[in-house]
Length: 181
Image (tube, rainbow, N blue to C red; front, side, top):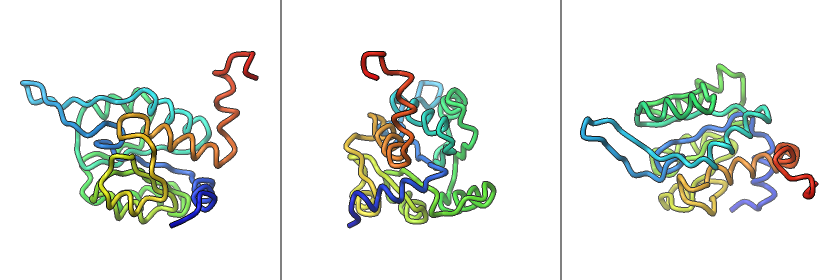
């Protein structure tokens, strides 16, 4: 088990942070309309966390095994263009992306919640998982969020990375009232 400072050191190197969708960006339930259209609920706290990463110069990617139009719409809304859906081998997809972006695996992070995420989590220098993830995801993650998937876990991880890199205070400053500065 790594110390908090070792985990922070890993987070300090992150230049690309990738996320799974079901169980991470959403709470994991799948909703279908009578027409067969898949729907998901996304947490706005998580969205702002990913936006803050982008503002800090950290690339954000989505790598998920499922494919849904609502995910495409949400990522377009957040300005996330590195969207990989219907992925069978998440590790291979991440490694291809790292090669394209000329980023080392030790400079990448991935947040997943289940056994299909273990290899890609292990391939990264930094990894995280929500509080309600599968026990093996918790075993292999560098950081376990105190929040559940789709309930602020992504935001907590984003702020952890930004704090480790010394960028969080400056990114939050414009939102704080004058009396807090």
